[in-house]
Image (cartoon, rainbow, N blue to C red; front, side, top):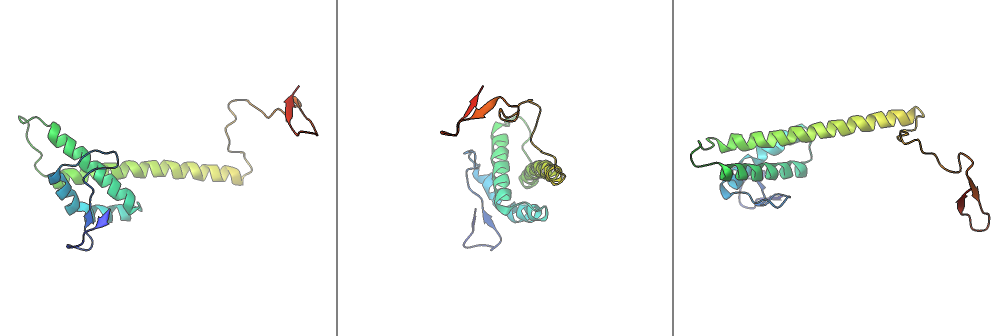
Length: 148
């Protein structure tokens, strides 16, 4: 992501290839650059990092490019690429926010458990440390744990 030199200071240059290496059609790339300010403003309101937002916009642009090229000529073309691309971006932003929410909730529960003195590590395997159940002895010379 780089600022454009000769235009609006808020406009953002969108890379012609997304982070997965998919090419973006030049027409879709132009639209992505036009809506980039609006997309960044929206993402910032939702507390999403601008670099992540641009990556999401590039991924949406690559997906829209693929959708346009895969559409048979007999089907109606996409009438409003600006809206179509912005909605694809919003779907990715919402998916990212859901993931962040799940992660934050998991971290919150984990920290509450740790604060209450509960060990948050899973115990479902039924494994214990060999020294804890008396099956291991230590050799004072080499400090190696041996199972009896």
